[in-house]
Length: 355
Length: 134
Image (cartoon, rainbow over all chains, first blue to last red; front, side):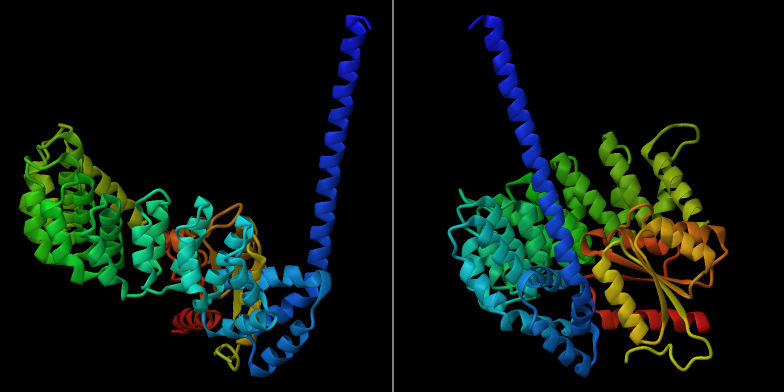
């Protein structure tokens, strides 16, 4: 065989392979589309009954339950997806019949069993479903998945725990922020926001953990949830924590809590001997307190380095009339400054909002 | 029945705009049960067009919709001043809560966070409709 013939033969093989791959891909897509259409056709007549389960009066709910209990074959998988999906869309006691139907059809039982399946996909789907439906009996098994070998399952498990809303899961998630099988801080923080008020004790303990990520997340959640009882612990963190990022987050949390008792602590954190990130966060938090007494501390920052001065100027705007008066006194006509910039933005915003 | 729309001299019109079919149909069914006349659309441009063609008494708008967001619609509707008497309720996902302030700033009357209780939504529609009557 000549070199040209061998090259031609190779090209022919490659072309055949490409055609085969394209045919298989196209065929698979057609098949999938056909299945989706068939599932949609099977689901359409059942949708009104599924909605009646959630919004109907008792007689309508019973009628819908009788109809949906007997659904089988190709129609059940899409119906199950629809029913489970309703938990992400609506809330309230109207979901109780849907939960009952899923339990009667063994969907919840199967999911609880799948939490220990070898397949990561099955474990993840099960945790997602049980979290969505709010099956508290699965709580211990889902907590175990927070340290699963698969990082994606750990994320799904945290989100499921957040949906279940039990405060006892908080310690498990806060502990999972460190170590070889850790969970991203944002996922844990988001899940912690979904837990009940009992979570405060776990957050207080987390503020004293050696892991800086856990302390930072606990500070964020304490501020976002408005847990005023954690104010003293946050003030301690702001004053003495060894990590400047955690101190800055404690400052932001104190600003969100809005307790005037934090004012002297935040003011101290804006002094020149403090790290720049802490100073900026404290200045912003002073604005969030909306306390006229913060005016003097923020005015002193208008001559600080640009970023801090801008933050202080924006915070003064938040203080209202006393802050605006301080900015007007500090702004020199025709001279660019943080005070002049904040006043210009405030004026534009005022004009836009009053339109 | 949760609604108060029945028994009034005129059946109140509600427009429900959401790109999620399940939410759209569920809310529409619940409001119909409460005595409202409901029309539904699945994107922002259709919602704006429906409002301009036949302004409803109350519009329930999803914040995140293809074409035009709920916030954009509120902004446009309130800016031209033609439908000031129309009540607007925004439906927003938890992660878009920061949009709520903007929503109120441009003229929304209320907002509901997903996942929401359909019963509560009807009460809110009733309250907005009652304010319009007042």
